[in-house]
Image (cartoon, rainbow, N blue to C red):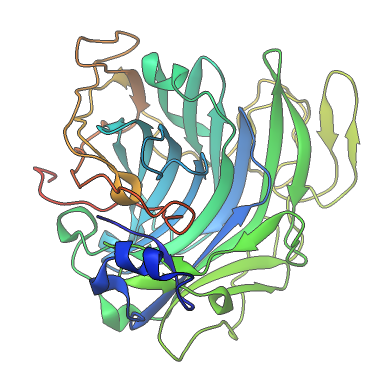
Length: 392
């Protein structure tokens, strides 16, 4: 059983009886996670990030239906996960749905640059009909079909930096790489409205907005770290999520400059004007959007064409349909078993979904773990535990 627990004292003897004793002690490494206080249903999310480097380490942005980990709940989650291994030159897209047996649609996307050497713009588009992932304005994967239809509930927005003990998935843990940091310059959320995306809000992280975000203070089995609020820092207009040894929490160094916007300037840098049909972000910065449906997410200035896609583009080869292996990719405690995802929009007898990837085929297969049971409010656990698989 994979149980998320508060790092502080247990709340009741009954809860203590349900907790896994092996996770009761503080861990020697500390990571960081923040999560939004409000949940969103559908939309476009753009985040400008520079990721951590080091084998065994993950830097992420994801959406998550709160309570998915509870016994009898249906899991709903969409992931962007950057691997620190291999000089941080690959990242994973994924959807996790299901109750008991988890269905996943993992895809691993190599890049020709290290995602730890500079800031890049990661984009999720989530509509009733598809979920799409883009990097620096270039779409690299689109999923349609049954699994997308199963994403029915609002989800919170989350960032975290952590270390998995699933060596087959993330590589052996490179302790000598610590401390490592994930830098987030800005996030923009566009609501989905009748086929169009309209800018609802953006956060340039000039301060930590406690009305929008909270800091995690828990852990879970399969995670080498405790999430420590002291490893969440806002400095020079950038959110910093740190991965450190115990007793060395926090960030006091210099924030690396964003080549497009510079620290503290955020995305757009100017005023934001909302109309009944579109939202325009003016000013210099990481690509102010020209209209609500603009797909441009990087660039040095304001984009003007609604259909223009800007950015350096990683993984921009012709699209091809891929079929990624599935299995119970348990979030942190997701179930066992596995369903195979068919190509494109065909939902097979094994309950697959359609996935189209540009520039990189999906090479990752899912991993199995036991479904967590019980521990209601105390079981607020989150990330994936991986066990045996044929992952390359």
